[in-house]
Length: 298
View 1: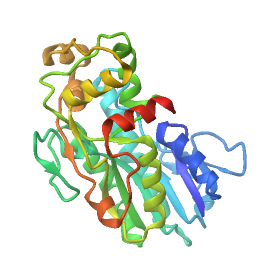
View 2 (view 1 turned 45 degrees about the vertical axis):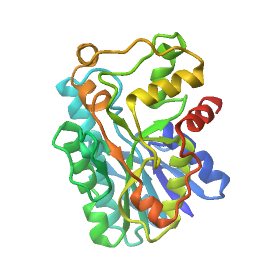
View 3 (view 1 turned 90 degrees about the horizontal axis):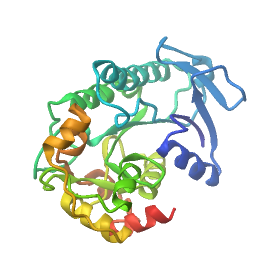
């Protein structure tokens, strides 16, 4: 296929491009500067502009771009960038695709399980109601921003990513230093659910939804076996052969990270990959220990 990808230099984008190229697809990149090759398409979400004539004729678009939510404290300016980079960029792309003479058949647009907010022990499938915090509001608007593409008849898949396991980025990469130093431990009560997924399965599932016409709408990108934070901590310590005797109390996490602590570290999301499983996707990693060992060997 001829595929356009945004956010191609991020954790998921980098791995996805490598996989898609190995599969023989023709890959183009959305970039925020003047194109340097024929395989680059310029766009500027800040100016709400895109080289629309260059968007004709793609088979699929994979939209992964967005401001990192885990870098730095959440000032009001940071929260503005988090929201606008997702909502404004997605709406720009969706509107542009909807106005094409030859629109793509498929738009895969990133989202996150932050959609559900802090839900305790509730089992969360794609039809579950959204949460009511900042990240939930962002995810709601993020997914709604693809509406024009859907109305055009483009098959839209909103990938609600869970905690992606990779030593090269994301939450796991940030945990490795303290855990390797032997000062890792559960966060808060340790009872909060962590819905994780191996990077290999993120890429496998993205390839799966790109080619499976039956999959559309929100899709939970999580392994079928979420664990509580205490179990995640214990398992990571086991894999690294390090003790995990240093719990971080909730007030300490909030003191260090501010509002981000409640949204990313203390909230509980027990998600199931209902739509992926129903469509027939076979996960490579369903057990956390195996997934962590593989992720650290990559």
